[in-house]
Amino acid sequence: MSISLTWDSPSSVSADWLIVAVADTPLPSNNIQRIDDSLSGVIAATIARKDFEAKPQQQLTIFQGAGVHATNVLLVGVGKPEDCGLRCLRRSLLAALRSSCQTAEQSVAVVIDDAILQSLTSVVAVELAADCVATAPQGGDLYKTERGRHPFASAVLCVDADSLELNTAITRGVFIGEACNLVRELVNRHPDDLYPETFAADAAVLANTAGLEVVTLDETQLKAERMGAMLGVAKGSARAPRLVKLTYRGGDAQQPMLALVGKGVTFDSGGYSIKPTDGMISMKADMAGAATALGAIIAAAKLKLPVNLTAYLGLVENMISGNAYRLGDVLTARNGTTIEVHNTDAEGRLVLADVLAYAVDDGVDCIVDLATLTGACVVALGEELTGVFPNNQELADELCAGATAAGEFFWQMPMHDHFAPLLKSHFADCKNVGPRWGGAITAAKFLEKFVGKTPWVHLDIAGPSWADSATAWQDVGGTADPVRSLIQWLRSR
Ligand code: BES
Ligand code: ZN
Ligand code: ZN
Image (tube, rainbow, N blue to C red; front, side, top):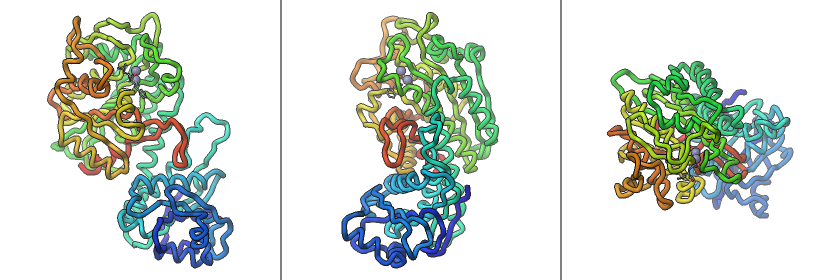
């Protein structure tokens, strides 16, 4: 599939689809007016009839418009320019692109209303459009005998600005889109297909291709590394755990080593604190943190970002069996902390405890962990926001700026010290759950015990990493949110 730029008039581009992203403005922008002139005023007429009002993600197809070379013209609204940021434009482009790849081998041309390009630069818009062309065809139909959408044969992006930068923006957009596709595919794969061993093997192949260093620790090595908390969770499963460590050196040796730590619970049954059916059905997605960390480091390598980065993926399955860990068991984490298990469904923090301590022992300079850690975070922030729990404000600010640049939503949460004693245990140094209230925060306070003084931010992605219902811009399943934020953060370093 090729994505290219054209400076030709959109009306003269031959394609199956000409997608026109139209803003809701009192008067049409120059580039929209020119297309409408070729269409003898059809766009103005549909707007006058209120058949199409350029509302975000609203679509209208004009078949075989004379005067335009493309077979179909697909109008998609982006709303008012002042309200249309990156997030809105992405959703609109995705909605239109998804409509136009329902048959195989479609060619598409995309033009974006000039009114939008005043707030977003052409470089940003071209990168975004390439990202959307790469991601739109892929969906949740991994195991369907017939795919609902198909990769495009070709895509042409219509631009006015002439800049060399725009071609590299396409390449960047495709790399980012491919990282998103990878994250979504991993999240959507079923848990009898993607489990610690297969996840580790796939990660190693991808990492080798991207030129990363790969180290995989198996169960014996994890024991030797004293990862007692992670191994406690793993005990109940017939699938042995793995720790995958991937390193990318894009900077020089004096530059800091950044670390991503991902929760990779390939299935979370809850263990003996078993989840009800409704809560368990989506728990193949409990490895989204690890998938996001993997997607981000592969993107960093492909984008040749000048940073040093290590990703640690803690891969386990939380199951029930005669060997499973019990309520009341006391686990000894890698850093010596003893943990009384009060709830086997609070397993993610046990996995992260050891993996965080392992990263600290490696001497990394800062850590960002990603985890579908708590339902409480989804209760607090809803399904579209990532909860940000820092021990270092500067790092939190950097990550939040990355999210803003990526059109994703981060929200910082409190980390007050009065939450810490809620994790006291009668029998061990701490227990793995606090009381009901403030559950996302006590989870973060638990993790804090394992990072020492290393600057660290915990990202709770239980809400945004998974879509429970389908929309015009995405299928049910993995969303890849917040991998784009991490990539933006790494680009800003
Ligand atoms: N994987 C879940 C959190 C989760 C819930 C992710 C819903 C995505 C959607 C996690 O392991 C878990 O079960 N957490 C418990 C913690 C509780 C036992 C303190 C929860 O949120 O209920
Ligand atoms: Zn759980
Ligand atoms: Zn979990």
